[in-house]
Amino acid sequence: MPAMVAEFENNAGASLVNARDSEVEPLPISPTGAGRAEAAGVDEILTAVGEIVYEWTIADDHIRWGGNAAEVFGLESAERISTGRGYAAIKDPANLTTRHDAVLNGTAGDPGTGVPYEVQYALLPDRPAGERRLIVEDIGRWYADPNGRPGRACGVVRVINERHEREQRLAFLSRYDELTGYFNRQHLLATLGEALNSAKRFRTAFAFMIVAVDNFRAINEAYGFETADQVFAAAARRLRAQLRDGDAIGRYSGNKLGIILMNCNEDDMHAAAERFHAAIRKDVITAEASSVAITVSMGGVGLPRHGRTVNEALARAQESLHRARASGYGRFVAYTHSAGRQAQRRSNAALSSEMVAAIEDNRLRLFFQPVVDMAKRQPVFHEGLLRLERVNGTIAPAVDFIELCEQLGLIRLVDKYTLGRTLEMLEAVPSARVSLNVSGETVGDREWLSRLADVAVNKPDIAARLIVEITETAVISNLEEAANFIATIHDLGCRVAIDDFGAGFSSFRHLREFDIDIIKIAGEFVQNLPRSRDDQAFVKALIELARTFEIEIVAEWVEDEETAAMLARLGVDMIQGNLTGLPSPDALGVAAARSPLAPKAG
Image (cartoon, rainbow, N blue to C red; front, side, top):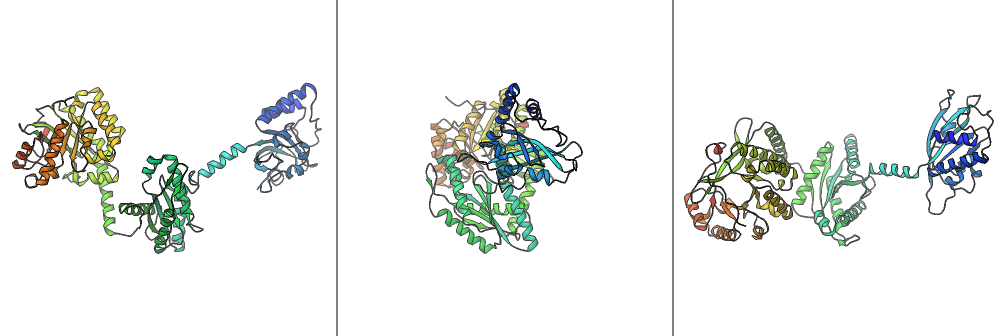
């Protein structure tokens, strides 16, 4: 910009910036001849970027503007703003500060080189109907007169409407959610923290609630994300209409809202929840694409009684929401203290720390149990069963920690560790054939598949000796994702087994839809087989259907010869259980699979 100003001064013959005091004789503002053409070119450039140069002599209140002032400001003539008073007349009265304030009300003195200033304000010139007011940035430098007071100011006015709107939008988004217009998560939690501090200081009570739109994923899938967003925003507006002055609402997460109810005890919180439910249920929400009826689940906590920090408040509201959703849709649960839950949380935290430490210290162990051929009673492969070696040296079975790892979000970490150990073992024991269990969470884990793929591509013999076991419930919970996972496993050269088959009570059509190599009949249908006609009928039907699809069959939890003999008569291929071998960390060191699995026909 300084180069443009200098060029304007040289072409116009007016010294607008370097003048030392008002005694310098001003040159004509309108050049002639070639100088006028060059100045016009400068004006065009300045107009294109929305800038105007000026000089303001304060003693006579005269302002000399660049030749583009009328065009940029949208005035018929710049004569109207040729004085400071005239320029002030087109300023927005709501301005908090202006150039006049920056120059005449400043405290700095002129050291001889002028005093810089920079200020933003709004103008309200005569604009065509519907056009916005002008937001301008005024940057310049004032010079003192012989008495040391401001004598003249030179600078540039720049129109910054677009930049101002961007800055305003960024400022808005720093505090508010774009979809709903209410607090975003960061500002909601900051407000919650302020409310907690105030409540503890003045000994008052308030409540925090988390509200979740029920079945929001199904709404997304059925109507699309745009409609789902409209439904969520409409639900937020209905809830906001039920709040009092001083209460707050904000977006807590994708389908959840957080509500702060000031001066609210636990009885008041229950009453508020009823109002919220009624507001949501009163009629359907109309979106552009369709009309949708929704319910919401809510969890709330009274503060600061049941939470002294923001993290405690969030954890207990979340816990209450989880309990509400576990009891059905459209429910509200308020947090209540429970010694049992507190003990369970401490236990969960201890186990979580123990599992992470066990992974870091290589204290997760694989024990191997043989899966034997029914006729020859020789191992066909071994199933890798996870065990936890505790710090005191005792060994804990998977049943003691796997389910909790799933609840605490540690299962993917455990599955990745187990995969690594299994692949290492298969490389170390070339004769071994092993099956490896994966959780439902891992079925969608691209990183887990990528690690397996790295080994399978470089060492296909290892992949050929690996069987990946998935539970039936993991398959039916997300059919499309499971189908992709199974296809990828086969592409890598591994085989796939469905574990605990029958426990999920799924229809047998899944055997046809997925390219399954092996099914393992859930042990609960095997352990009492000789004494249960129902179990016998179920197992017989399952075996006959599996035969139709040429799928191999393993029966788990086989404990005695009577059960094994019955399974043999029914046509089971392989059995697994204490009858044929207990899990052992040394099983693969003394016994290798002698009977390779035949490739599946077709």
